[in-house]
Length: 141
Image (tube, rainbow, N blue to C red; front, top):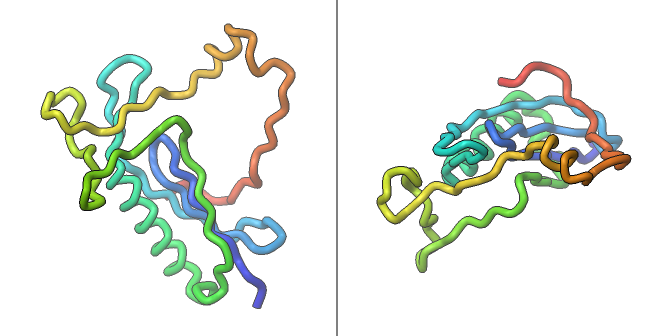
């Protein structure tokens, strides 16, 4: 049987795991949301453990929905935000468990959401073409 690809897209609101055939056709897709906090204008906070849990849950559900494909996965790909880092402790634990607003000294990851109008105002991105990946049918969830 032809090999398949699982692609995980860690977005601002959750992880979308999609199953593709070797020709790039989307077979199935599962979306698992995670919580996002907004402590200040233009910022968002998330817990790295929530990202991991969403990847695990969405991938499991994807394979449960497509049981005949579990032995045919050839590649797993990940896409996510850039300019982020997950600090780890000496035992490999994440050092980002509490809200930035809590003042506990251990924080969620703070991100800055993409704002196309800021790039346009700066004259960046004009005339550029961005190729979007093939859409995977069905609703999120």
